[in-house]
Amino acid sequence: MHVIAPNSEDTLRIPSGAHSLAGFREWTRSEDFPAGERIDFLGGDVEVEVSPEDLQTHGVLKAEIAGVLQQLVARRRLGHVFIDRARVTAPAADLSVEPDVVVVLQESLAAGRVRYVPRAGKGPGRFAEIEGAPDLVVEVVSDASVRKDRDRLPRLYAAAGVPELWLADARGVEPVLEIHRLQGSLYEPVLGSRDGWTESRCLGVSVRLQRDEDPSGLWFFELAVR
Image (cartoon, rainbow, N blue to C red; front, side, top):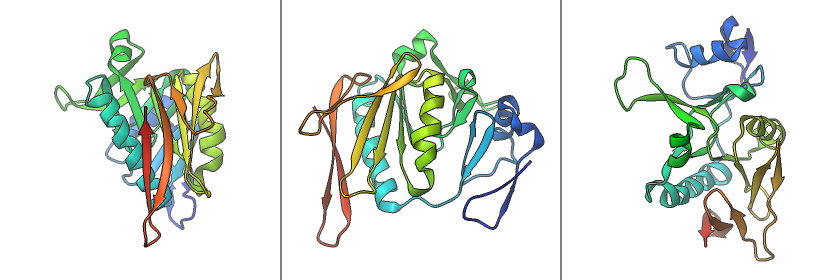
């Protein structure tokens, strides 16, 4: 199988066995798996993202969200927060993906709803991927990932049983943070208050995304919590 990476003249060679989830997982653990790109397995399709992140609408926003979640979850020893290259694999949804931010709570690990897969031959405390349904997944929408983030991934995260999905989009006039809660087999949007606060049942708090501009025109994001 060959895939032409979007917006690139390079050809990415994908092993023929990677058309199945088992074969894809084997490829991700091999030395031949390329570094630097986000490569996801979405219900039988291998999708490659090679476009660099927009520094403001993606990179800065992602860092703010991850930093706040780190304070809410990891600093309180409630679980772990992962950013970027943390691979989540959900066999129930035929899915293997690297979300922008992932939250795994200790209670879900203890209950066996999710587990960390050991990295072969690397000793204790070394893990290759997250298997099962994390408690919270965050995707930051970019120009190249609109359909993926708003259509394909929500359906697969729901099939995997991920309780809460956040979609952050800072490309418009005002930044938007949508919280979607799993209801049965589908996500339902959580309605926010008139002043912009939206409840996260997973974290037991309400959050509001704001953006300020400095004199040079650069943005600073704040994910406020109450």
